[in-house]
Image (cartoon, rainbow, N blue to C red):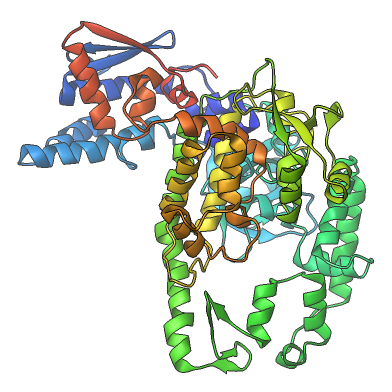
Length: 627
């Protein structure tokens, strides 16, 4: 669902607009008709119908009647449900067409097709500020219903307006952002290079979708710009792409490497000095252009000149790639003879290099789907968790545990921007440096076993300011799941035993660790240091090649611990069974929809009607939940 991440931005009115297909009119609401048709389908197949009445879902026995009759397309859809010859075949077809991923419930009821949307390839426009893009003029001619307008006329209409830019898969809040826009007479979308990181995008043919909200809720849209969300919600790292040419250019300004360059930008942004940050960016690009960086194989062979500069600044590639170019190629626990500069043995190439290339392609096709299921599971478990007020619980990290976090380089994950009960304020990076040098007991407010409040969660990792995200459970689920998706796309996850990577095993281990831990700190320890004596943990160690790595699972699934604190309770309590207490529409649109309806049908045999309250925000797409 592309618009689900709008919840992470508190963009409720824009989400309401998109639910009605972005038509710019409140008349003739589409959601009511979609509900009506789904009720008709259920009545034809199962003999039960439903209606939504003041946020209550009422199920009854009998056939539904559609007010205006069925359209030709709807008639064909219903007839298609009953085409199988055998009863078994018919039911399999019904499950697929109604409840599976591409079925009516998930692709239509919990998804929408928008008016005023377009798609094209992105191309780099370094001159653009991070919250502005250039769109093909034909987009504007459609958006504004001006088929013969010039670029100048379109730009006049676009003034002070926003579009939403979405890159699939929609994993977390940074995959859909708002931009000011202008038009140009090109077919591609001119994209600011600073905005690539949040989208995990580059310029090798990536495309993005553009949605023009027909009603502009300026306060919501402005909150969705990169300038308002300059850090990644899951990790508090920069959401700006300070990389490659920018880092190389900054090396001529006295910054040694990528880490120093990114730290400088972060300090400027936290100080509210966006203009200075953009001045540094422009100067860095100018210096990178004047001091053009070219690379020859002789420089790689000698580890000198341009190659030495790249390694020193870390402006391109990684340490592992530098090693592979002119030293050694490691494949799990096996070291190949030779390197990419000198070449490798044919046998090694066929057995290891080509296998790794195939595996990389397969990972993207096969394992990303499992990572998507991981995100859906987390959203299902924690979707009901909202930001509230109440008495906060305290989580205590002993001096010994803090020392362990320091040794494992996880202090920032645990404590950055968290509320220190003893100091009476939020911890800064300078505070963390003091704790790193002199470990001490730290007590913070925490959502573990208590409400998620502004103080218990800490500052918003994406803004560095007070938290305002209402559906904090959804946001935490998205950002943790996004890390899982990136993990599943890693090229090589094979340890010494050659254990194949499976995201489902990572998910099982995380859920098992939450269920079996007596408290949150034990849960953290299981993730930081999987026990080789435990069979499941051993599988994770071999699969992710964690031997000798200090962070455990966080080596790859690096998120702020505040997200895990929010998810810990739901992970312990959630059971993947058909519980109508969560709401039938919620259950039906997650999985096992056929069994959900059969359970309702069984209960209706003892009662004339059933009335339910939906408790998950996904029911908003059925008009059965108020955001």
